[in-house]
Image (tube, rainbow over all chains, first blue to last red; front, side, top):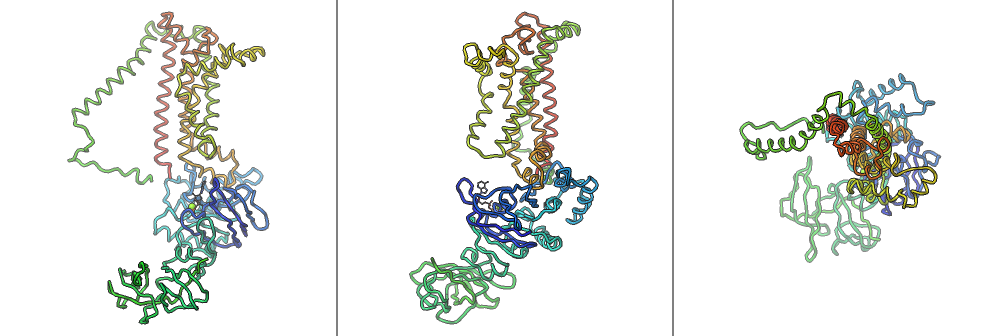
Length: 346
Length: 292
Ligand SMILES: Nc1ncnc2c1ncn2[C@@H]1O[C@H](COP(=O)(O)OP(=O)(O)O)[C@@H](O)[C@H]1O
Ligand SMILES: [Mg+2]
């Protein structure tokens, strides 16, 4: 099911939780809503589900305007952040709930419900746990029961709010891979919310980066990591450092000095680069500073550097250096970004 | 969470918990508490039954089936049968509204619900005298239509409803606030109607708390004296509830009869207490294991 979100605005007592958000979700896509806490991810997910209604804007399911359809009419599978399993019902009753409450005209017979529940349990690899209660399950098992329950109603779209948020690191990783396989097998259009960029980049076909109620960038993992579209995305995804610079005659100047890189757009701005996109040089026109700390990170070494020209406040940056590079504490290093982005002011 | 709940810290045999009192102080404290309980609670309760049965089973039975006593018992049951369901519905609506929705005047509504707890029952009764008495606007009007409120059953029901309406709501509000609306939203998203959501999800989640509130509400509805005494007019055989009947018998020095009827009320209290304890056992266990 293709979902189109047009210029959505959502206010809570005048406070805009979402501001002019538009997004097109293709059929069968696995999309991540990624952003810091409070950026409006859950709000957007709830609007798609019909658990809340927008202050302005429209939501289409395919060609049908679903903006005013109730949550029941939209027929979406929603997996809540804390699962919201019915604690007085067994696993089987939880999963069968959506079928049991159907109007009698479309309700499958009991035996059929039992069969479907058992199929779903096999699908989420929880066969044999029918009679357990939610409090007798581990976090990861509850998560999968919640997913099976949502899938039981044959939803047009699957929505998951922080599906791995409450799980420990190991289970998270396992379930992440498992969800990807699950998605590829069932082919459901899926939107999941996360504040964990690793999760979003690894799992999703496309990542929607959100900040303060706005969409900052939509793109593949490569897009948002390699070609961040805004200062926010650059600093939020991956590691990065930034410095105030000025571009004059296509030369980038830091504190008035050329640093050996060029840019087409003139004016003041902010230079962003990643620690790994840096090379040590032996030239005058480069960034330079004192190494204040050094730490080993897997196959490389990260040096923390205070950059300061005389009479200026120091700037703190992090660069990746080869293991054999001479970067003793307190020594001075010179380097240039090899890949960078300048976001000009205004 | 349930995994953690079951793991308790093992007791160290050689060190006393610093919060433990010395053995003497401990024994003394327990004795004082027990003596206090025995004197102020147990003794009166026992004396009610001793007094009631002083002239034997026959006199006890006579006192209860005597027409005025029987009428009082019937009236008390009738009043409770009206007031309790009314407050059940009201309590459910109010706590639902307060726990699941945001609206203006919510804090005021919560305060209002507590009102009957904070004012004297006599005043609760007097309010209805003011509203429906012969000097009021409503009273004569209703009377001209042949509807008697004061010194009649409707007045007693009104006063009882007023006095007992916090019980169910008070019990449910914290429970429902604590549970939030996540389960309801899940049910709705699975296609359940509002009624199905209430029936299959909300009600099972609150049933023990609801039952507990109803029990307390019922105990109070049957036992209320002050407010009812103001509006009832105490017409024997007509507008006397059990507590009022007890007082009348007592004032007539008819001790055995007075205590016989009183023993029924005491029995009601005991049954309520027993059920409440039972519920707390279930309820408590359900709480510890049921949260996730
Ligand atoms: N029901 C609500 N009432 C008032 N404010 C809300 C409500 N839900 C969310 N908000 C506000 O909207 C903003 C976005 O919230 P949310 O969508 O939950 O963020 P996220 O899921 O990205 O952490 C937050 O500032 C939050 O405080
Ligand atoms: Mg959220």
